[in-house]
Length: 338
Ligand code: PEP
Ligand code: MN
Image 1 (cartoon, protein in one colour):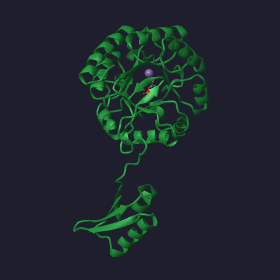
Image 2: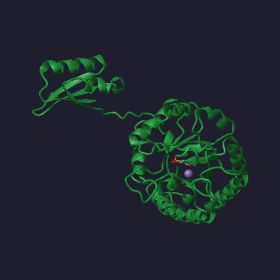
Image 3: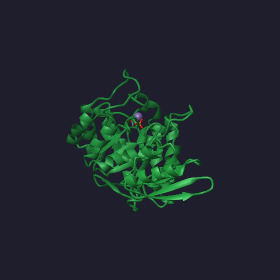
């Protein structure tokens, strides 16, 4: 940790800061320059409350040297972590595409969706039974019955299921329904109590990026899950809120290489909630794979214009099929498979 003091700090002030650092169990090393006085504090930064030092009148700035996230950091594990979802490997050489409707609607819609997902060669299926809608008057999801419909359809095609958990009280129900991957949505990225609870199980978690979350906040959210014992975490970039109104969210492609450098955990991309329009999904998917994403989370519906939720952004089965073919070509060029 580096503590930068005000230029006019008196010797007595410097001594007081040094003592505070020693009290916290670290060793201070003072360096007096012409413009600045800097103290390097050597030791375990976790023991330091940065704000206590910042509150001292002669302290101008306190800079952490160590990363606040540990388990999820690549510093703690250099190799890529591969997460096993019912035999499907996420984060390895193979790119995984998860596709399915925004929400579970009916048994028939789920069966047709599952057929489309399996026919296109995707490896997992998505679908929300509980939907986080901006309006309380909008369709909220079909609930527990949806988990059953989802499992029935997905099992027929051997597809592991990905579905969003919004309420900690539903976690046991998710486990009873053998949900293969728990999705934590954008709106819940910093619901710390929810993160702690999914941290206590071993079910893989897809952690979506918060609407306006920095990469550091996102990594810390993952650390909450990991610190509670569940290391099976997959990051999902889904676009961030920006000044632009021409599309739903701005896909942060840059986040892909940054995250791949910062964490050993897999990173996937949701092009559907980024663009918000079906016609944008192929281009954004290609960009994500080319930039190093380990997979995609794509919305598809047997009849997009009849979808109960996010109709504008759902691909139809044929479009998904075509896209998968194109993505295979890109995967091959970058030495991966799909
Ligand atoms: C979803 O995947 O259906 C969803 C609601 O996504 P997000 O949390 O990214 O908005
Ligand atoms: Mn959706």
